[in-house]
Structures are given as structure tokens and as C-alpha cells.
Amino acid sequence: MLFWCSSAWSGQLHQTFLQVHLLSWLQALSNIDASDNDKTLLDAGLETLFSLDVLRQARDTKSENAVLERLQNTAADNRDLVFESVPIIFMGYVRALSRHRGSLFSQGSQSQPGAVQDEFRQSAMKFFVSSVGLVDDRQLDIRAWETRLSILRMAEQENTFDSKQQESVLAINRMLDLIVITLNDSWKSKSPYCIL
Image (cartoon, rainbow, N blue to C red; front, side, top):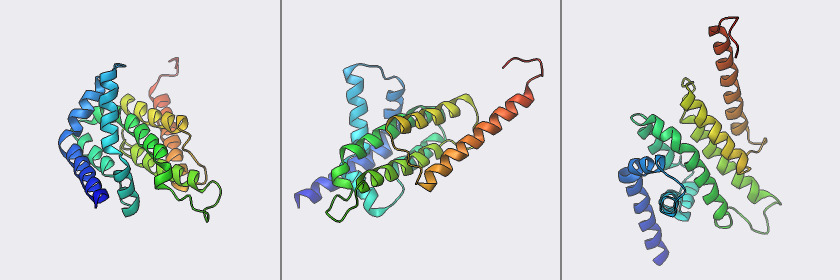
């Protein structure tokens, strides 16, 4: 019974944070520096967004992460703020998955060697695909590219990519296609005498 109360309270805190405080937290993140107070603010927000109970619930229901849905809605009026924050939120999600790996992923005697790592990477890359998806393919400005690149760097830094995951490969290939299109369009708009 105590677990249920704790889990219910955590879920309510998560929902309240998303609905009422997410925008102000994102605004605070945009002014963050290396101070202990700012690190505490960042950590508290990430823990509220990605507590063990929240991660379990999302995993059990196999639903889209509520954080990403809320970020999508927030981006309509605060695009640059969301774009600036998405890589940090992705990193926070991956680190929360890693921290709670033992509680989230199967480790029984029946599990195959490496199964926990595969499940971890699959969950991380699902969030990666959705995070990159927040940046619409039609958005080809500097801020959009910085966001895509930062998310990609975080995925590399946290070692989440696995070429066996088709959805992840498709997302990265789509990003490569956008790069080629953007470079081609950029090249066409330059005069032949312009130095790149």
C-alpha cells in the first residue's frame, strides 16, 4: 500500500510539473550556469520528469512519453526555448534509464547475455527518435540544426545507438538526407565565385 501511495504521489507530481511548471523550468534552464543552485534546479526537474515510477509507468503502458508530448505543445509558442532544452532533457532521460536499469529491464536467469543493454538502448533510441522528431524536417535554420546535432552528440556520448534498431537507423538516415538537401540548396543559392 505504501508503494502505491508513493507511486501515485510521484505520478501527480509529474503531471503537475508538466502542466504547470515545465515552461518556467525550461526558461530557468536557458539561463543556467555552473553554480550548485542551477545544478540542483536541473537535477530536480529531471528527477521529476524521469523518476523510476514515471519510467516504469511509461514502460508498462508502452505509451509515448508525456514529456515529449508536452514539449511538442510548448514548442508551438516557445520553439527556441524547447529546442535549446531538448538535448539536456534527452541526456537526463538516458541517464535516468541507466541509473534505474536494474529495476526497469529484465535481468532474470532466462534473459540472454546483453539483453539488458539491448533493452536500455532500445528505450533510449526510441526517445532519441521522438526528440529529433520535435524538430520538423522543414525547419532547416541554424537553431534547428544545432538542436539535431546536440541530440546526436548526446546519443553518441551516452553510447545509445545500436544499428540493429531499424527505427533509429531510419531517423539518422533521414537526418543525413536533410543534410544533403540543405547543402545542395545552399550550394545552389551561392554564386560560383562564392567561397564556402
